[in-house]
Image 1: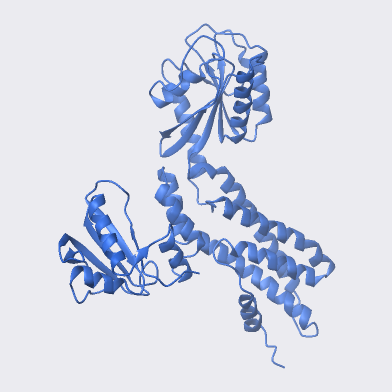
Image 2: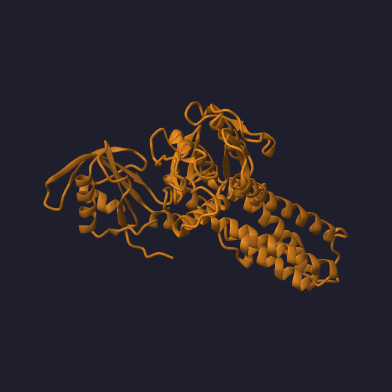
Length: 446
């Protein structure tokens, strides 16, 4: 829980701007605002232009003051917002005046925490608020806005209702076996269970495909030394980020940079050339390259059009074949040179020269990202949410056998675990919810 202190904090980012917002929340918020403004009343939700004074009666600023009366505010408490002129000094002075009048500095995330405990938001909305502030792409903003509107909350509530139905009827079957229950009740339970499994499995798959939406999809560039990886990175970034040299092994570590393609932010990883290296430092770089491939959402495999396919190229082809579950883009680079590379070794490749136009590759990357992001599928936005769904699925799958063998106590135990796991995404499950369903659905007062 939280204490009942009145809290204050600057709600806008540090720096110079037109407006700074100082937010106060708590039982004494209105009293503090009247002391700073010397106004006796504020009408809720009405912006009031007011002079603001320090404790010595000297004017600090002229600002808009907005009063949000409890419980109709973000935190569910009385909230005051001072919209003062931008800059660090004025906002800090206002915070100090609030502190002198009994407020304390808010802890990180405390406004949202109070909103959660006062039932103004659930955990899905709290996480979406946190991440939307840091969102770097249009796709991430759209996805998080959907969660702010309650999409994931509704999804979880539907599954909770089905699990509560299953648990309630199971508990009744255990405690009141002699009562007349619907003859098809266990068929209904099995049907609901299979639908939940499909729904959660699809959600997990979609979430893993779109995991890079928030922080940026990872794109790894791989290939043997001197195939043009660093040149491609520089071309994508439109500046010379990586050193280009004819000496094999120039790039000895992974280089990671971010760039926008279409509406997407991607993290491009230029890896060390993959070959049999004797240099210990280069070997470490190659190991990091393989790790980058494993972590990447998209892998760009470069081959040199002007050279024959050798053992180092074959090593790249082997890595591709080991990662066919990933999005692989094969590129035959240096198309301006006479062809010596055996094209039959790679299929469905893009032919280009990093010295000239790389637009076909950019379009291909954008097409892949569009297919993974422009979808109405439910998407989980944090590892915490993904783990909760994985654990929910695990418990439901464990419940199948007890249901088949009639061991209803064990079945109820696993369904209760599933309920607790899925509920942890939004708000912890309480046993009273099952009792409400149980006693609301059946007449047990004999």
